[in-house]
Amino acid sequence: MKILFSNLGYATGISGSLYHHVTRAYRHVYKSTAQQQAVMAQFRQIIDREHPDLCCMIELEQGAAHTGWFNQISALMCGDYRFHDVADKYGPNSRTSKLPFHAGKSNGFLAKSEFAYDRLYFRNGTKRLIYKVTIREGLSVLFTHFSLKAEVRQKQFAEVRDLVRESDGNMIILADFNTLNGLQELKTLLDDGFLRLLNTEDQPTFTFHRWRHTLDLCLYTSPLAGSLDMKIIPQPFSDHHALLVSLS
Image 1 (cartoon, rainbow, N blue to C red):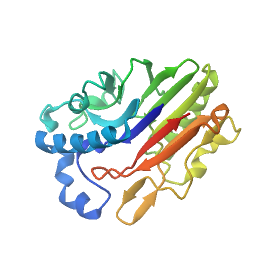
Image 2 (image 1 turned 45 degrees about the vertical axis):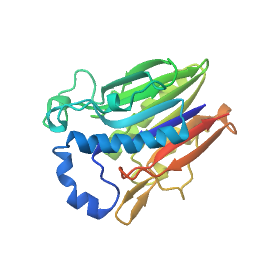
Image 3 (image 1 turned 90 degrees about the vertical axis):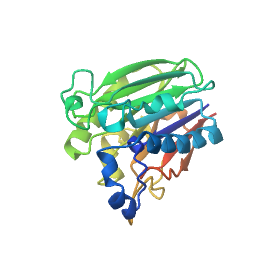
Image 4 (image 1 turned 120 degrees about the horizontal axis):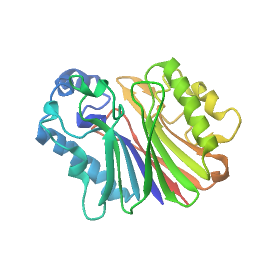
């Protein structure tokens, strides 16, 4: 079983280079269909090369005026990946999604098989969507995008800790944790040993100019120890790397 997690950066095609951030900044305001299709084609190459069973994606556009109404997940669907879901990352009743340039911003997944899933929501923060995808009996994948605000992140970490504790079976957690102050932020999640971190600190997953940081992480419940491997995959169209988790 292979699980791919990717922060697509809304298909702006902006890598971690300072040159890209300066010369392509206008894409945060408007992205052409052709440019988005080019990014989706690059991501599709990763999918075709790695053959994941489940593709978990954050920072995805469903379609809005500033994207020319282009639905990015539709561009990825094909015969091998017919099953999917996509939803507003701010929540179904959020005022944020009504603001300019926020409409259509989503998270979603593609899968080879029809997995059961739930949309869950944080009580704290602006980005609230959490996906829980059951990939087999007793094992689920949780993926989300944590807050940029340290205080809110800690509240969300506590919510996830409680969610995992209250769930039956084992769990793999994939997310952009936005651990901007270092992996010591994960104390709330890792202190009791029930959850473990698959990443190591010397594996940066985010680039901005000369800055490297480990933000995209995989956590797992302790009974899964020894059964998971992870590969970090550079994405030329994003300042985040993808994570490919293999489960034996």
